[in-house]
Amino acid sequence: MIIRTFGLSAIVTVGALAASFLYLGWTGLALCAILGILEVSLSFDNAVINASVLERMSLFWQRMFLTVGVIIAVFGMRLLFPLAIVWVTAGLNPIEGFRLAMNPPPDGAERFPDGHPSYETILFEAHPEIAAFGGMFLLMLFLTFVFSKQQLTWLSWIERPLAQLGRLDQLAVVIAVIALITVTEYLVSDGTRAAVLVAGLLGMITFIVVDGLGSMFQRGHTRAASAPSGPSPATVAAGKAGFFLFLYLEMLDASFSFDGVIGAFAITSDPILIALGLGFIGAMFVRSITIYLVRKGTLGEYRYLKHGAYWAIGALAVILLLSIRVEVNDLVSGLIGVAFIGAALVSSVRANRREGRKTNRDATVAATR
Image (cartoon, rainbow, N blue to C red):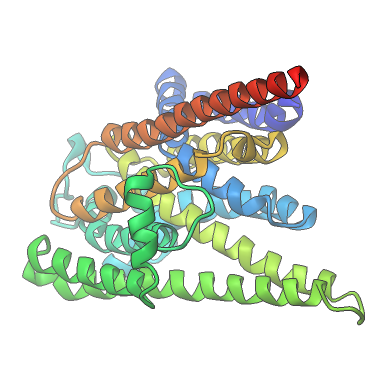
């Protein structure tokens, strides 16, 4: 199963490393490997959340996630997305932006001799808007989870009270708006405040629309499947529901990739190496991990793993919003996510052991009667 799940990712990784070596020699190979490790370490919580969504999708849409989704992740988010930022913020079309990225200023300067900013500088200047969009999207995802009633709780001392508060309609939206207003008031300079506010609102709106459409078609699928008669509506509804879940997954991947794409520029500004490392290596392995979690049934076996991933998402959302003003090392983002996932995994193992001991005791008592 491991070979079948990770085999393609391993082949793509070897190809990407070979391409980076042919492109820039040993330096290119080392940078590509570092970027791939960076992406996987930052995105393990993404894989857990993806798995919780993917297991509700049909086999067709799972395959779409592994094929079309990979193309979007590699070329869309890791190559075209930075070029699109340069296009929007600097008025350079993608071809000019790519040319700018491939021909940086001499001696690593932030600007060319004529005063024009470098590709890397343009992206860093656009970071507040990017962080606001991605941070608010992920914050809405986290708040929607903690304010909803869960059959199983991990951090019960806080999750249960939050679920009770979630009875107030649209509380997640209210909290998110308050957070966005606070961030724009205290962490954003006057010159970019309006742009950051709009970007944050767009992140919220995007989540509400995509999540709402997915929920609507899921409810339609449930009602259709339970109908006593009618022309196989389950297949048709599943297709619609699967499409919006696929769209939802791609938006999740985009939001998770923001910190990785921006963080990559601390290592290299070369778009070819970023696409090879983050996209071909990192994104492929994240998808393989997602499929492995689904096929292995890991989320069912380790009951609190999903909860840990959502708390990691909440931490990442806060980090993204804080990074508008404060520089946060990517290592911190990765370690926080690993800490939440690891703690949830340990809690799951302990709960399974307790449950196993209880089952054995009950069986022993029953046998002695």
